[in-house]
Length: 145
Image 1 (spheres, rainbow, N blue to C red):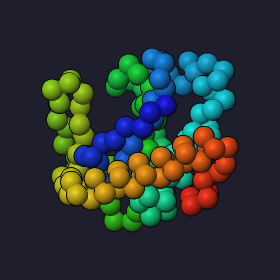
Image 2: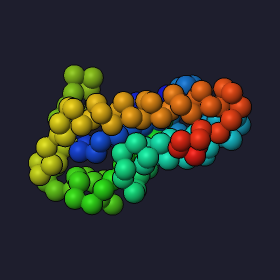
Image 3: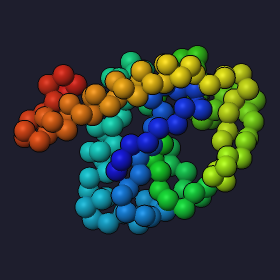
């Protein structure tokens, strides 16, 4: 599952996973996909926590807005735009050129691009280190993946 990123939810490191194969629902995962999902999700969540320094990573699957499975991962720290209701405060909805709807909190403007890019780079580096360690048949020593 390749990681993707979104920058409009007020959470540095917001990402999502999607299966390489086109499916819409978790129940459509085949044997290998289903067997590896937990390990991939744990590894990515751990990487997001370590790269952002946030203690919590919310996970959410929204399957009816787009006909492709996405597992959303949102690092959360006290005082940011996220809470257990996904987005805090008054929200606005905008239709993007792609037809998707972007939901943004009026009280929490988008984070500075520099902060988002720095978090994305730390995540990229951590995942690259993990892949190199796994290719050598070892666990990643720096981040315990």
